[in-house]
Image (cartoon, rainbow, N blue to C red; front, side, top):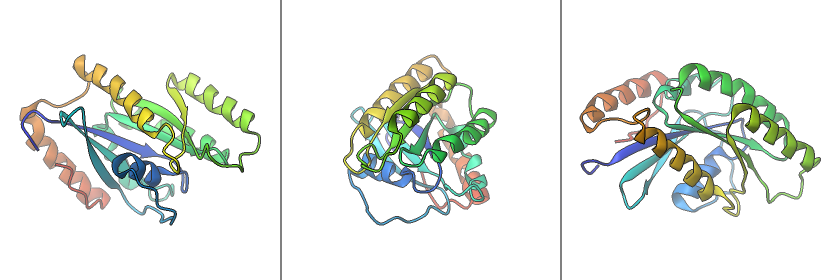
Length: 205
């Protein structure tokens, strides 16, 4: 990592099969894998941003509620959270309310959130207007932005990251988020401790 490069960590939150892994792959690799594989632990990919000034690390967390405890330790170091639900399964939107409670209790009060409805390309969306209204209602309650995306086609995926990062950079500019260069080693040790506690095998620096 070059001197002065800032690492920004985002965490993907949502139930199984909502498209968290697909979001990560689409944004970081511009790729979509039709074969579904359930996330058992915390995985991540990274992508440079703003001509290499920032390194965006996107963390994919388990959708199974029984496995999510392994990811909670990462929340305190996250700059932003992407809350994803499946537009074809309304229950996955309702499930996010429990996730928000965990985020509120374990993350920085300045961490930025964004609500995302995936699979906007699907022809199987029943009661679309009702789902859309419920999603917008939740976003309004949480005072966050709501986007509808398609990981399959790539629609609005980059826009979600662009919006989230702009708001994160504002908080960083205000001194509420981010690390001083001298803190990189200390934070790397923190990440290593979380890795061992949660079973994640990723190296993010």
